[in-house]
Length: 112
Image 1 (cartoon, rainbow, N blue to C red):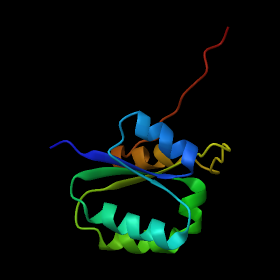
Image 2 (cartoon, rainbow, N blue to C red):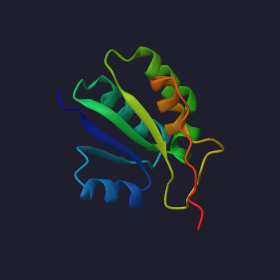
Image 3 (cartoon, rainbow, N blue to C red):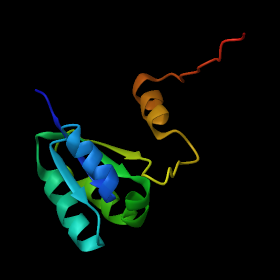
Image 4 (cartoon, one colour):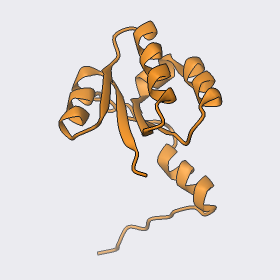
């Protein structure tokens, strides 16, 4: 089974993902609308990946955790930087891979 992708965030981020072919997109304007959209996305068994900007995920942290605990199918939620370049203190994708694979990924720069 192939899963669809959903993207939630600021207008520029969402439009970019929409143009790239992401199935469902939502521009975050207020918390109530976004939580309603997240509820819809989390209940859709065809959605396998939710890309959400860091700023939106920080604002809706409690609601997202609640929805994650209630989900009924496999779903990966990945926080991504928005157009302002917000970056987390740790690489979340690296941590997800580390938990899944059970090993740390180390990249070394080549010496000239």
